[in-house]
Length: 306
Image (tube, rainbow, N blue to C red; front, side, top):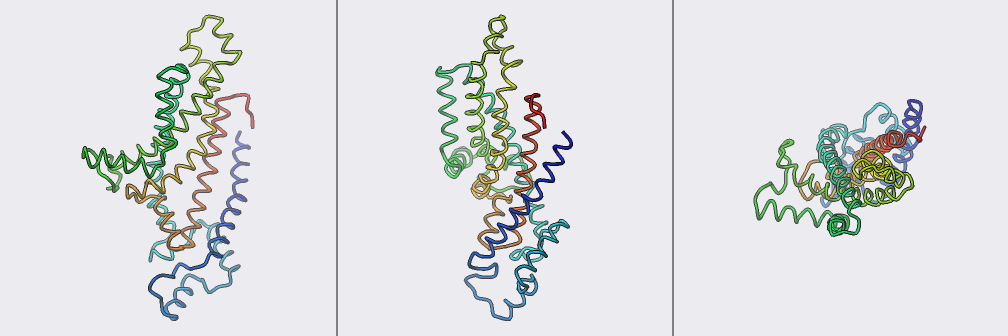
């Protein structure tokens, strides 16, 4: 297992290089630059800025200089946030997104798996139809619609929670963003869990367990739950990555200073180094999440060996 983990970490290096290189080429060939704006800078000021950030170097020299700094853990200086490095910007935004995204994924797994189990055990009953209807609403209605609805009910009509803001990890400021991401992720988890558990409950070894007189509770908890969770584990990786995409909308709706808002700010400002730094971060997070999912596979199904 340790050798497999080491191989996965080493294999992430070429993946990271390809992602950075492709993104580097794309942001450089796109028209426009980080210092373009409605107010034109004078030629002297523009030349000084380009010299400060080494944009007057040949492209290949800039590229290899960036890779060299990346190997030393330096993501470079931001072009649009004066006196701020990309490391500092990411360090400020990452805890916000990890807190919101991490809590929402845990809640989505807990609530989604529970809803999927209940729906599977009450298959084709009104309970099943009601749960699947709620799950369908969560999976089909976009986050930029659900978010304002939550604000309308809980912040404007009932004035129970703030409509937005962060206030340094204040609990009441996190409720609505976490609720929004939980609704989105729970829909995927519940649907996958229901289908997987129904398939497992119709397996031959479950029929054998029933023939031995085991109760439904024992069958589900001891025999059906672990194999039924394997497809759910498969969904954790894409769900974690999609949470970053959903965070772009969520953080704008609730004015959160997280990675999602930073991504849109970097793209709109053509901040090359900030865009590349965020690509590196998202790629590393994707590799780590997929590695954890693979290790979870081995725990759920001991027949899997790496």
